[in-house]
Amino acid sequence: GDSVTQTEGQVALSEEDFLTIHCNYSASGYPTLFWYVQYPGEGPQLLFRASRDKEKGSSRGFEATYDKGTTSFHLRKASVQESDSAVYYCALNTGANTGKLTFGHGTILRVHP
Amino acid sequence: DPKIIQKPKYLVAVTGSEKILICEQYLGHNAMYWYRQSAKKPLEFMFSYSYQKLMDNQTASSRFQPQSSKKNHLDLQITALKPDDSATYFCASSQQDSGNTLYFGEGSRLIVV
Image: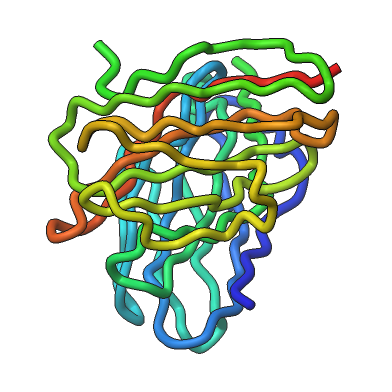
């Protein structure tokens, strides 16, 4: 079945550090890839998505590029802020209209001032 | 104001009892979903409904029954509760013919003792 593997556990950074959270996927067909962010006490919210090879998704300074060759969709941000502290989920959807997402385990980002 | 309302936010239930988790969405979407987030597991898809009809069911147990009384409601009835059912249950919605981006509620945290 479909699966998503992302950087495990927690990433601790200082403000203005560069962020990379790795995401690799395994799926039949041509999935749409997503990054979601979850703040404490809230549900996950979409950061951005990408549907085609080499397509770049971006939002709020975060970005990721769909790479079908390496089956990856790594999340990057050049300069993190304390307010970016949250849990980040990589996810995929192989059915265009099913709304059935397969999520990774989530990566906790803690940014220290 | 939250556009997807889940009630209750927290509940503690006794093993063997029955509970209903409420979800209402005010985004005008035509599809609704339930996801579960258990400790140390990724968010898992449970059900999807489109125009009040069940589209997909990935929950093996019949103890979990979604109920859609109105097109913007999708409640989740859980019977014969077990401690393993302890989790946060997220309701989500989307507009299937318009990108199908999922919007999540804040979740209902269930603890079964």
